[in-house]
Length: 450
Image (cartoon, rainbow, N blue to C red):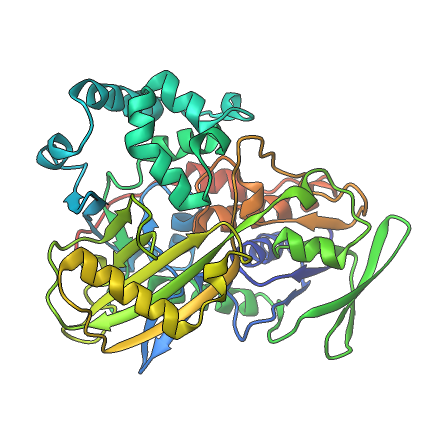
């Protein structure tokens, strides 16, 4: 790619930031990011309270998330990370189970034979790296074949419904296999003491982009796009300003992209659907037992699908002596009736969940509720990644976690998606970029324990 070519990136989340960084590394100087929020970061943004910052929704650093680790290293933030073994609990029938503990696994209501089959399933999934042969096949087929129907019904049917509001028969086998291979709860999780680590990532990456001469337009939304034949010519912002460019990268949810580009006919782009998420940060000072970081609610009787005790991973995230809880609810979409409830109604439902689970009313010190209408692409059985490049407009490119199936959607995969889209654009100029190869090769040199 020649430095003289101009690029407009629509969307300043992690995919857009990753794309801008990769383009700048190859010498591009005329790059503009357009972001409707007040700062870059998207879903990795933060909630502020009296100088303390909390994640919009749960985020943690995974030791195998190479895209994230590479960027943290490049931004000199990786030495700040500390690692802590976390407790992931499952709630079922009024009891808590830690499946990583031999005693907890022994107590879990699953037959002894199915527990052996579950162990076999996990072992086979850990050894398998490439899951492309499971694309177009269901999670039910994978679990039944490698573990058995009893394993699926006891554990995986609740989990796919918690994540996508889909049964295993309609969920992606490639995605569930990739997730089991990753074994995200089996190793320590990372955080940065004294900070919300996503804020550190976003602020340092924003500074790196500005230092490379990239123009960042925040509080700016695209209202209209001008195009002719097979090329987009410009985007017009809501304030009336027009931005012309040689290339355009769209990193926003596909529903918004296709609304802006109604004539685009790129394969599968219009069929992608997203979950919505409700995320409430609640602080309290009352004791909670048992302690945990991640609590999965398997029965779906509660309003929340999961609860995170943020200070169990990062004790410095809130004020001294605070217990910081993150109640989350994954919904099948923003048209779900629960999405329309008022903040007061939702917080009351989460308070009811707390009392049911822990046997005491929740004494709230402070709370904030966030709604994300398009949170995560739904990886259903027949999901296929769309092309990185538009099949209608020669100078339009796409990036985002909807291009990363069957990987776990994460901060790292969003960053890496942006890098790979930038490399595809660079490759159109017959130049090679080593960034994605360096990211894939990246390994932690050590894990400083908390």
